[in-house]
Length: 134
Image (cartoon, rainbow, N blue to C red; front, side, top):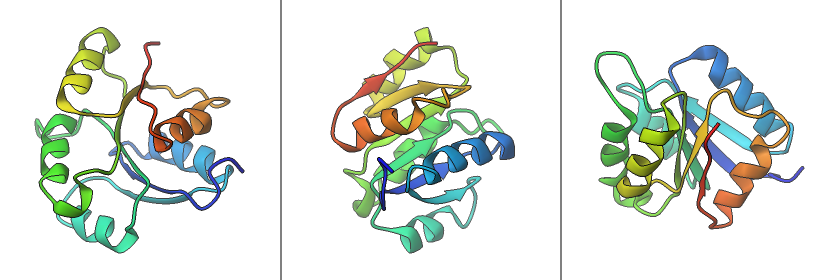
């Protein structure tokens, strides 16, 4: 239970990816909130606060990107210092420098590694940046 009572919020539009991450984190004791991204995202973030880490996809429908969402999240005072991690199928060679420059705390490629995902998230919660390629 390495994530016991850690509050992790996932913003992911793919139901299968969301379900996998949620199960992997909850089996390690995490409390998981989630949203696909939309009009109620900030309400759900606020209701779930305080948050230990936000996991953010980079690719959404309608030309919305995780980079855009990162800026919107960071614009809210309560989330200026919450670690945000990109969890994405984006090409790591392009996404890692871009996420690092943007201020993300990490990049974890999809599909996530079942055995190490929770430990990767714990490292980030503990203040250790983590940028992984496939």
